[in-house]
Picture (cartoon, one colour):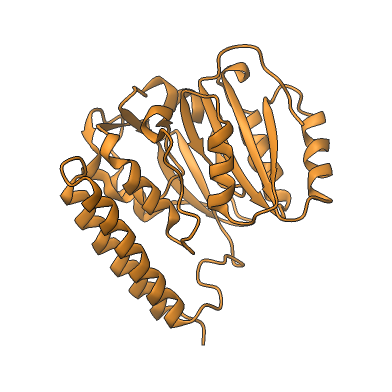
Length: 278
């Protein structure tokens, strides 16, 4: 299913979703509310898992929002990495923007990011978190690296922003044919950002009013009921894979960025193991 536009696509917004709740419709509404000309961006919504009743609900929403250029893709294979890769294969935009299906963006989000993007520069917004069911916003740790209207900042200096793939505008040429590692059980975002980091030059920041809004949910699967061994083994796998990426081209990849990635992965793994629900 597709709502079509006619002009050149500047941005492909990729939204993976699995058994979506009402949060997805709120996410899509925030995209429909963008000030950027709607013919300049497309939404690639990737549904995986069960098709119905979710496909029908999505179609009903799109029928009521004809101005939103949206292509809905379906994948029988589960997993956020699988969904994102599926969308990357179909994306037509010069820039890629990842958004999780329960998060929101401010109306000026896409226009502001596009205005400060260049072929080798990644555009970054301010990031806030809000509790599900509350309008109260607070900054998250990633935004400790935020620089109001900052320009031409080395990407290594804002490593926290590269722990996730969302909350940024990435030139398609930086990504190229490289994709998310579907074998990783978590941490696939930071692994992907490390993989493409050899083509990143610098970063530009929007004003603090341009925001990616991260929804915190009490039913989040971040820790779940996973064992200590699960988190330990995943941490080791991620470190080994990251080392493989760096050693594949040590002259292209930043050792400083790689070292910071290893430290963050190790510390994150320890925190996960300490927060296991007994």
